[in-house]
Image (tube, rainbow, N blue to C red; front, side, top):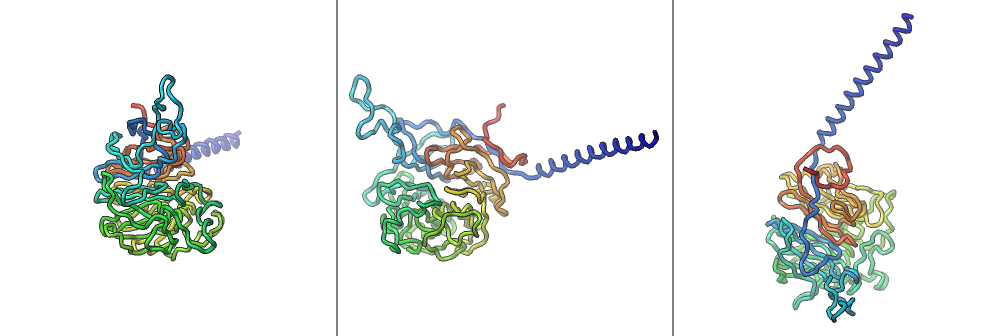
Length: 432
């Protein structure tokens, strides 16, 4: 009997000890999790306000925030479907029942739109050729520099042919097959353009239809995105959908400075096999080189979109490090665009991932993912091909969506908080 009581007591003691140990372990895990902090956000489902004039946006493929915290976007007017264009249909769309007036709705908004912080539309322009320039056949990317100038690029292969956004497969480098074997590609959008905020044309680097490949310093090759360094007044171009490089020019004169490819190598336009997550890392960028963003401490972060990686360089092109992210992502790739957090150290990188339909928050030093938010869908806080990303001075995030996403969203910065789960899902506003 005593032996049974002793065994029972031992079992009770073991259960109590196990329970205490488990509780301590759980508390320790919670404390460790709470020690990991990250910026918190909520989507603003009421931003921006409706556009006037029955205007609608097409593929929305660029966003930038200027020094006044005005938000600029660029979209593709020509990407709208027929039923979104009835007000300007040619041949005409449906008529009103008792008249000859075409349908009231809708019409493409001008290509460039400027909003204030509360979502009011302030200005609009662009989308047509001017007396001294040819507008890109497929707008891509917008940047407002430290002087207030507005820069845009374009990624059309040929005039009148929409740029393919489906990448990494047989269409990679589309347009090259129209030339004899070994001949350099001739892309329509082989330039970047600089405007004043009222739409006045200021300068162009490169000439439409004159691209000669990734080692041509006078022309671009379907450039994706632009960054202007206020310290040196240099413009960095993620170049892009046709070329495989970063190239740097003087932002005032347009004079060529330098260029490089992946790992700082000389770019090579030779055909590449389809991206394989099991293969060794590619020694060249794949199309598109989708962003090139300079941090305040002088490091350039380059989006090698279809290779699922960020590569980091010094401003002279010296390779520093890389991080492969979500390497199983095929097709369009996972690394679309980045923006930095607004703390003095720029501690975090916000990564737009249009394939997995999320924004990832990365620690900038380690390039490890801290947490992510978003999901695929049409509702506020969800994404359909989230393409571009920017932050304002208050730390709010703005995202745009291409394909049939056709919108911009605002995510309001809510301060720092503990990371309680890796994937936060849709950041719907909390009820008060």
